[in-house]
Amino acid sequence: QVQLVESGGGLVQAGGSLRLSCAASGRSFSSYVMGWFRQAPGKEREFVAAINWSDGRTDYVDSVRGRFTISRDNAKNTVSLQMNSLKPEDTAVYYCAADRGYGNRRYAREYDYWGQGTQVTVSA
Image (cartoon, rainbow, N blue to C red; front, top):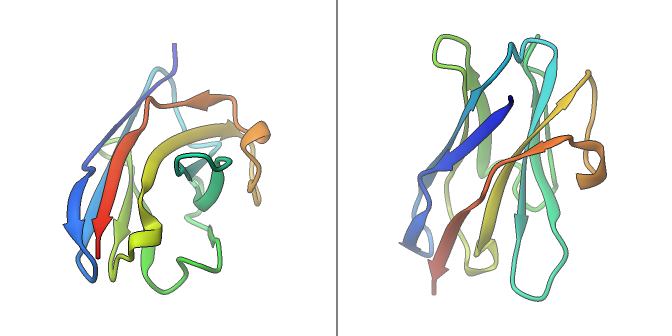
């Protein structure tokens, strides 16, 4: 059974940094796309970043490009999201997701597995 468990959220001031981690278990993820999404109150869940586990190919939404970095650790079976220069508009619940396949996956409906989410709050 696939399990995704996020950690690393918290409260940070604008301009600060946080590192989110997603521990993946239940199968080999070598042929999966791993994504990070976020959802702010009253808004739809939106794509943040994704990485193809096989070759490390990455994709980012424009609003975080240059500030956030997604990476994977094969030995630990984890996917991380390093978030720098955080802004109040980055405040949301952040979700890790997994989809079997390769390529760009920017839509929540494309992902089969989801974590429970971790809260990120950025104060002004």
